[in-house]
Length: 196
Image (tube, rainbow, N blue to C red; front, side, top):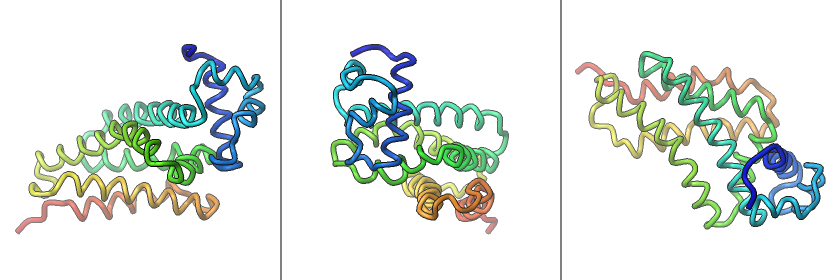
């Protein structure tokens, strides 16, 4: 396998375009190669097979997604602002790349169990960011101290994820980023430590 480079990136981007247009199962290596402007064989210099390409695509895009979001969160002072920024960045990054949104929200869900497990591994870093914000909120007394971290994480990610999926299913007809504040307010109010 070759190291990353311009061709690797070109193949990843071509895969996003082809999978968004044709669906994962109809996206043959030959279609991806044509979109990338490389020979079919070139793809196998970088990836074992289509499955490896899909996981690599998710790892690359999600890695960039997480790094950008983490950097933005670090500049926020309050827990409320950190959660809001996480939601804003999630919506912003996917609303700026409709093809990637289709791949992450629809196509990745239709893959087999082994592939979903590999994708789950990649997601762990992102869920770690959510955990970090929730823990901080609990330690600072902003959020209820007896929240179940696992349930809260599922609620945060599930709400963001479902909001994005709904936007994709509605052909991106409305402003996804405009929903960040209402989604954040809804979540924060559910977790907030209320005075007795």
